[in-house]
Image 1 (cartoon, rainbow, N blue to C red):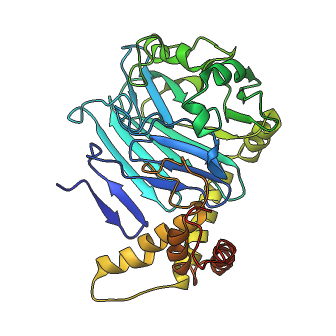
Image 2 (cartoon, rainbow, N blue to C red):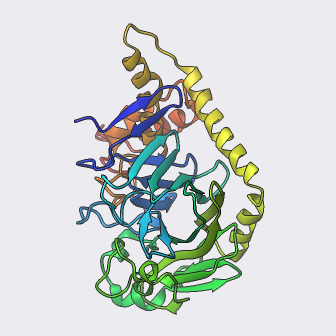
Image 3 (cartoon, rainbow, N blue to C red):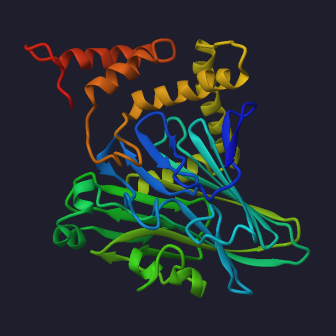
Length: 386
C-alpha cells in the first residue's frame, strides 16, 4: 500500500493518504524548543527537556492514537458543519475531503480541501525563537460568500511528564490560566519560571483557556462543544486542565484568502508581545522559513554522495543526515516511542549518533564526545543513561 512519496526537489516527504496504519513523525526546531508532530498534527512541544519542561500534553499509546496536538478547526457558520485542517481530530470521511501532509526539514504542512474551502497549516520553530508558530491560510474556492469561524486548540501540560500522570491533587489545584490583551497565559504557579503563552497576529473574537469548557463533558477533540456551538465561553480558571483556544470569525468572498498566525511559546505576556511584534509583518516569517532552509542546505552541502541509485542518494544526502542531526540535537528519547519520559542520553546511542555528524556539526560532535568521556567509569564501561 502506497501512502506517500519523497519530493526530492523540495526535500519533503509527502503523505498523500493520511489514514496511515502508524504515525509518521517529524521534529521541528534546531535549538532549545522542539515539537514532535505526526502526519495529523498530533504530538507535543517541549523546551530543552522533554521530561522536565513539557509545554503541551500528549497521551502515549492512547486510543484514538497520537492525541492531542496542534489543531485548527474550521466551522461553516451557516450550516454548522466543521472540520480540522490536519484531518484528525475531526476525521472527515476521506471520500468527501482531500487531505495531505508534508514533512520538511524542521517544518510540517497540513492541507485540506473540503466544502469548497482550501486550508493549510504550517508548523515551524524559527531559528532564534522559543516558540512554535502555526501559519494558517484559508481560501474560499466557492462561488458564494462564506462565513467561517476558526478555532485553535492545544492542551497544556503540567510541565513535568510524571506530574501529568500522577499527583493530580497538586497539579489540578495549582496550575492556572488567564487571558489578557489577546494572549492566553498559563501559569504553573509552583514553578518560578513556569509560564507559557498562546497568542496570534489578530484580535480574537473569543477564547477558552480551560480544556473541559472548550471540549465539554462526554466530548473529545473530535467534537468539541465550543466548535459545535460556534463560540468559545471565555473560560479561565485557577486549577483544572488548561488549553489554548483562540476563535476568529472570518468572511471570505469568492476567491478571497486570509492568513492567521498563532504563537505558542515560553514566557509571559512580554514574550507574547515580543513575538507578535517581531512577526507583525508576515514577510518576516517567510524570511525565517528561508533562514531555516539555508541552515539545512549548508549542512547538506558538507556531505554529498553520488551513486547509481537516485533514491539512495536522496536517503543518504537528506533524510539520513536529517535523522542523525535530530538524534544528536534532541536524543532518541524525544519520540512517540520513548515519549520523552526519560531525560538524559543513552551511552551507546549517543556514541553512534555523534559519529554521523562529524562533517555537518563538528562542534556538537566534539561536545558529545567529551560528554561520553565524562560518563566513563573507572571500571571501563560507560554509564548507560547519563
